[in-house]
Image (cartoon, rainbow, N blue to C red; front, side, top):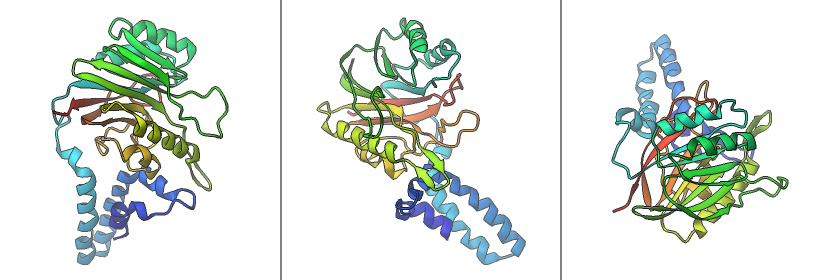
Length: 296
């Protein structure tokens, strides 16, 4: 019953002490691992009551997370294919990373953790297929569509020093009309002895949410490493006004053993039809690709 309760009422877990609520929500699907353990215990005790009670967390987990496992990967036609990738500032093969992303044939590509030497490689490798691009600080956007109204996106928390620039906003001129495209890389979080450290990330999410709310363009695409999942209340300023296929099992981090999707593709007045991971690159994140459909 506790497992089922945490799955359903995770928002009731307080964040006041060590931001435990956000920590739980970041890894919420993994509560399902309690089910096989409880099953073994029920069998060892030969308890019919325990076996019947176990159906409750099974049903809850299946309702929340079972849909993506039962449905097809691509659940609908899309108009735009977007790729989001934190390429890592320690990536020693930016050229190979660029080739891998081109292989997915996206229409727009968002990259984070760009370094000056790697940026030159990406600009050269992506130029033929993506003639339009914008870079602000350590984030960039490459597009098949013309870009205009490019400007930095101020999502820097108060406690971070000057020179930190991890957001941009641009307008993409698509065949179906203009779309505002945001690229953002929110501050990292840490699991420490005293809990979940996400203060800067939450403050940055507030600023990003304010920017999206003030956006005059009706159609918006947000691509970025938001350093948490859509279940995490810390991202509520953003997720409350955006659409996403939030609970698809397209875990993007860490590359060696992905346990969470902290890379996101979200939209406003558009529909995210599906999200999937792409093959590994030289980054510690996996790239994700998302289909996006215009509203009728």
